[in-house]
Image 1 (tube, one colour):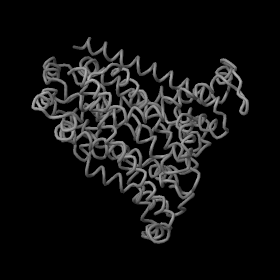
Image 2 (cartoon, one colour):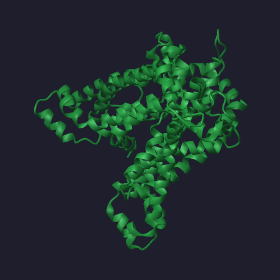
Image 3 (cartoon, one colour):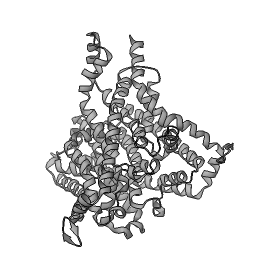
Image 4 (cartoon, helix red, strand yellow):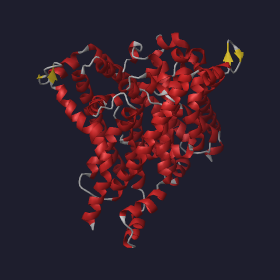
Amino acid sequence: MWNKGLGWKIQRAAVSAAAVACLVPAGVLLFGSLRVNGRFSLRQYEEILLGSKEFFAWFWNSAGYTAGILALCVPVAALAAYGLSLHRFPGRNALLFLYTLLMLLPFQATVVAQYLTLRSLGLLDTPAAIILPCAFGAFGTFLLTQFMRGLDGEILEAARLDGAGGGRILLHIVCPLCKPAILSLVTLQAISCWSMVDQPVVFLRSEALLPLSQRLSGQTFGGAAFAAAILYAVVPMLLYLCCQKALEEGISLTSIQ
Amino acid sequence: MQAKTGRTGLLLFLPSLAGVCAFYVLPFLSSLYYTFTQGVSEPRFVGLANFRDLLDSPVFRHAVGNTALFLILGVPLALACALLLSVALAKGSFSWQRWALLLPFVLPASSLAVAWQGMWGREALSGPAALPLTLLLYLLRNAGCLSVILTGAIRALPVEYQESCCLDGGGEGRCLVHVLIPLLSPTLLFAGIVAVMNYFLLFRDVYMLYGDSPPRRLYMLQHFMNSSFYRLNYQRLSAAAFLTVLTLSALVAAALLLQRRVKRHVE
């Protein structure tokens, strides 16, 4: 049928062309990182890996923030999503709308709010200023709720009739069923945290606390910026290589049906 | 039994709700207080004066105009590209192509900014091509992500629709316009919301490329808000944030309602 026609060949070519265009930025980075003064050289990597203390300090800051956010966000979101999707209580739909809206808001719309809370808690210019607001962001709860709504309620009802308590149902039935969604959440959240720019600009003052995502530029690393950019991008790219399916499923899950 | 599970549900929800209230909802409500006051040491009540000042401010108008322009150009373009890609993607496996299409979505903003500068050079990026190049960056970052959503939706459609399309002898273009787009409209609507949200995320890329002072056409709403924040002008910032939240809530509520209606119509 249509799969064999000329139209199909054109479509295949167009998709491949778009895919190649998407590879260009990463290709430019890789190519640029292997050249110094127009010649092939590994000097940029040498400069970053052996010569730059700052690179590692900022790199580990990024890693720490990402890990901290994930460690808090996943359990909080799993609990909330379980409560929201498999129980009925008044105001449930309003809460779901609130979370959807919060997820869509740009950071700057809530910056004053976050700033006020962090200031009154004395957390400005500490790692907690980056971790806490992100960890309590609405996205995780939203994503897992979307997934759990599709779960079969009968299994849970059966477990309840067998005398399993709420905690056991959550740990032994819901969590294993939700593994793919949790993996999706981890992947999406990690990629987004790794790219964090707006929050550190506003909430951090000390250079020593900044994540690399905010410092990585030509001004900071001069001629070695390409190698620094590659080394920084390796983490999300590896994650993507391992979890492509989880990432795609996570993106599809955000679609409200 | 019913009442008990209800209470458990709310209890489980509490940690998340507490965090959301502490960092987003309550301080936002208290910052609303700023929007009706002026003066730093002795705030006094001024009613809607801040909103009037804000709407009169040429910088704010410029930022809103740029944001609207970018959304009007970028969102339909991104949706169209994603839709065309998905029509093909849904029919084959395209393994490396699918991997490549999502790569720009995965790259950190800072790394992408270094690549982007390497590709076009500093001069081109700050010249008259700044807006088209940023639109291209937006497409590159989002077409893959949106096409994942749309490909999933196309694959979920019943097979009969595609078959009826083929049997009618209509070309693929007609099939797209008369069958696929109406059937996909709820998903397209949602993909539109995602595209708007991702426009706001594009600020990270623009910030990494240009810092606090981008070319005129790229001065976004967020630049305005950031500069109000740096100048400790919380009143102006809170008023701008309030208007943004109001606009986006209306947009999301309208989209969700419309989606429900369209879905009923399609079914």
